[in-house]
Each structure stands twice: as C-alpha cells, then as structure tokens.
Amino acid sequence: MIKSTITDILGSIGVKNVGFCAFDSVKEHLLDCRAKSRLPQNAKTIIICTFPYKVKETEPKFLSRYAAVPDYHIVVGEALSDACDVLKQKYGDFAFEYFCDNSPIPEVHAAAEAGLGVKGDNGLLITPDYGSFVFLGEIVTDLQIECENKYGECTHCGKCKNTCPIALDKSNCLSNLSQKKKLDDSELQILRQNGILWGCDICGEACPMNKNAKCTYIAAFIDGYRDEYVIGEDTNNRPYTWRGEDVIKRNYENIK
Ligand code: SF4
Ligand code: SF4
Image 1 (tube, rainbow, N blue to C red):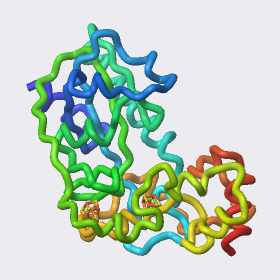
Image 2: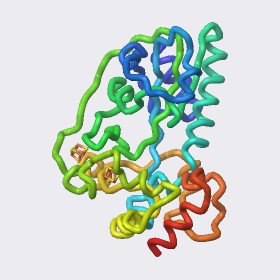
Image 3: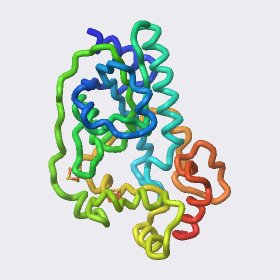
C-alpha cells in the first residue's frame, strides 16, 4: 500500500521509474564518501529511481550519450529534491534524504534488488525499457516499506568484454581517463584511437540487451541535447565542465 502510494506520488511529479530496496541488504556494502553522513539514522528503505537519458538512436559525435544531455546532477538532483519535499509533506514523521552519484549506496546493486533491471557484466544496470542508458538516484528513508529481493544479472554473453578496449578492467576505464586533468602522450593516443572526447559507451553500445532501448521522455534531457561539443559553446550545466573547461578543450584538440 505504501509502495503504490509513493510510486503514484513520485509519478505525479515526473519521477516515473521507482523501485524499493531494503537498506539492510546493502548496509554492509556502503561506499565511503562525504555524503554518508547524510544517511538517516535507522535507515530502513532505499527508494531508488532511474532517469533515462538516450535522446536519439544515433550516437553523439565522440561524446558518451550521458555527456550529450544537461548535467544529470542538476536534473536528477532537482527531481529528487522535489520528491523529498512531497514525501515529507505526506509522511512528516520520517526522514527522506536524496543522493545522486555522490552516494554511499551501491546504486546498481540496489536498483537490481529493487527489480528495476539486472546487473550487467559491464557494471551497469540494464533496464527492460531504456537499457543501460539511465541515471540512478535514490531517496533513503527511515520509513519501513516492504521490499522483495529481485536481484538478477544479464545474460553474460561476453560482448561487452570482447569489445571493451581494456577488457572491462574498470581501474583503467577510458571514461575515467577522459576526465583526468593530466594525461601523458600515450594516454591521449588511447583516447584518440578510440574516438573518445568525453565518456565511453563502447561496452553499452555493444550490449545486445540495449538493442531496443527506448528514448527518454524527460524534457530537460530532450530540450538540452547537443550531439557534439563545440569550442566556445555555452558550457553552463554540461556534464563535462565539472573538471574545468581545460579538460574538455584538451580532449577536443586531441581528437579533432
Ligand atoms: S566504458 Fe569503455 S573503457 Fe570503460 S568498461 Fe566500458 S567499454 Fe571499457
Ligand atoms: S554485453 Fe552481454 S555480458 Fe555484457 S552486459 Fe550486455 S548482456 Fe551482459
């Protein structure tokens, strides 16, 4: 009952893909980050949400799909902040804290447990409708909500590993490499060889479970979509400017 009420409340403010994971099931695996101090005492439930971001069938030019839409920290953060306000009005005795990216919650695992999708071998959540092209965000609350563990995994077909330039060695992921402030010549060459300006979708695009991924309904992503980076563009609210504009400019000069 609480579950469907919360799902309806969030749906009415545009947060449409919602699942529920017991806090206890991830509490041994919390990630160390500053945001951990914001977790409600006696947290009971993680209300986890996905936000699809694929805008077009065609891929953006040298950008990961996530980098072609406005900064998700802002879009998802605003949506979850609004959601918390509404939930606090409805359930005034309980705490609701939202997290997005900077989160102590192992998000992919929690979302898989909540049944929003399955965990892929490439470490991404793969949802039935939008594939792995989704951002994750969550609200942690001390409100007890009934949760079932629906954890599942992908088909392990191996295509992501075979296609990935570093065979899924996440410690050397090219997406992270593209965001580093300092790169040596060989690292720049790797980015150039793989056509990477910002982020990397190679394993995601290779995944058969992404074949029929739908495009997003989220207006902020559709309206703010740009399929290429252009020197001198307005970089306000773009996902690649949190490292300072010099990093994306360097990558642009490297690949153009
Ligand atoms: S994002 Fe790119 S480099 Fe990173 S694991 Fe996927 S394919 Fe490999
Ligand atoms: S490509 Fe295959 S192994 Fe990799 S995440 Fe997709 S289904 Fe899983």
